[in-house]
Image 1 (cartoon, rainbow, N blue to C red):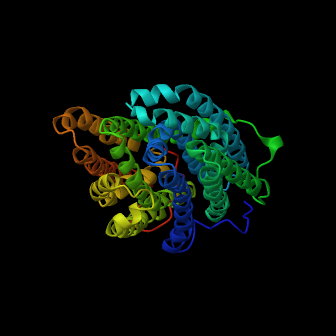
Image 2: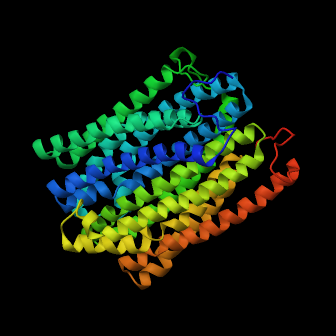
Length: 466
């Protein structure tokens, strides 16, 4: 297969340096995106007050609930396209790419319609405080208008990642993010539009990032080049993408649903608690996106090497991603926690709100290293074709345990401290289950392929059907 000069060779040579080259721009992209999202929260918090801060900052669970099932499909596209690249099947790569782009656009409009319809009902069910619900509804409805562009960027970036390119998605987010910050300040400070201005700025920046990633794909000189006349859905390939993507999306939806239940309990504690939690949550996002970059590296490297029959490289990839993800995410968590009030002041100067933020940082931010094991081993399982297993584990640990905690433990001690303890405990349970599942699957595949040491698999590996 023809390789462009931007394509990384994931099948040969040392792994640790290539994983870093892949993961660090991806981490920078995600952190940069979160920084710009945080700019939304910071601008309204500083210039429009804590109610606007709570209205914008508390909506992540609602957005993710609708978005994650389709974002899961983009993970499936990444896995399948990477596998075809590993196999050297250029025809299937092209079909998978054009199927993915069309699915992105269709799914974006589906999410947009659903979001516009259910925004107020779901916020009401979540017991959103009355003093912020109208602002939250306005922000969410504006945000959902941009969903076709959000999904186009997510799928386009997944296509580029499948061939080892994480630098150009970073460029897209850098440009669109800078524009987002400028527009935030203009609409909120100069035009006094509060959450409306933040929503409009976000939509415009999403349009810019999606157009840029589409431009890069249309100018590709490899099999992942996009052409409008070739757009169409190959349902056999879509089925393969769905086998990986739907369980991955289900896992994201499960997380979001459990977070909505936690958010509902959180909302019952008042708008100051909601605002403080939303401010501290931004730093958890930064750490998560750093460790998730190594998860995505594990997915992509494992998928390509699995398709090429290099199973020992798959196992080595997993080990390296766990070590690197743990080291980088733990270091960043400690830095944020040590800075404490100094970083929380980016979002608020209100003492009551800041106190809540510090509690969340102590119980969630410092403990987030636990989720490295759940995330990276889940990524490895998806790369091997076992996507349903980590989704079921997430269903039990994140959704089941957190629901049990919210409705059985929290009512007996209805404090913020009690509530946030659900997160590290659920990460611990999920990590233990995922690691055990990986060990079992890894041994099964190793025996099937007759691996006794570091050598290339001599038999064709068929994707798992789970």
